Length: 87
Length: 271
Image (cartoon, rainbow over all chains, first blue to last red):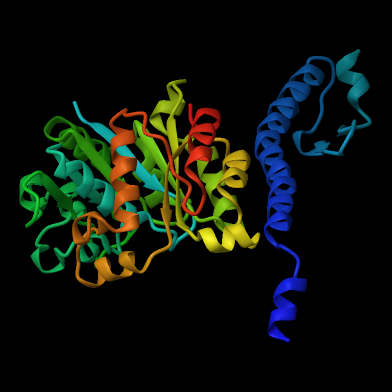
């Protein structure tokens, strides 16, 4: 019985290898991205601030990584009285 | 001017202290002047592994806080004249390590020794980042096991961003030391192979230390494994790793595999 189990059991190392490769690809991207997203956020804020008054807190920048395509979502809330400054 | 090595891993229990002691003793046996520094403040163990636990009077924190001179805290090994230990404090915590204090101590040690080996605590907190901060060379100790490989990957990221070398825009020299390798399990397909770990972490290999009773036996009697039984398999692996640290191009033998393969492997992976 024990011998049978020994022979029928599949190898576990390939699973370990695959799981690590997928996980680390994500983790490395996440660490690198957090810097990139902060930089992008700062630069976008500065660019917009030249033309209209916006609230720092109301700007969100998100990066989502997909297998083939990654998306960058920028969400900026513009207050009503912006026209005054722009004018 | 000596070279500063950090022995690090992220994960605990993979063999940082064993490796620090074994490599330090291997280098010192060749006549190099070596000091091994325990950075694990609060949980020191290097003194025990090296058999000097009853000779500790002053420690790293005492030196940093000006309560003792460096020469008072250094313990000379009883077996090797050129091997010294700077123990960590057992009663205080890592907050007692200051960046400036560590810099001064490492600076002074570099003047007096050929090799300064910093045994890092586990984790990625203050103690670990201070241990790696001044390093010229990093030895990443890894077990062929998923959690250890993941933590090593994280540590490699820190070595490339949080060290003085990285901040100055230089490349940190990093080496992988694969420990507790079990050729039977690897052959059976139940342990990550050397190739797998190298491919995932992509840093050059310094050595492969096989899982062995000799490591436990050496620590039981308070001796670096390279001094306890220098012909044991782990001791041979550490002696070879020490020679590679000194710049020798030795081929690396994978335990349990045939000779012909080693050369090929060495040529391909370890440049």
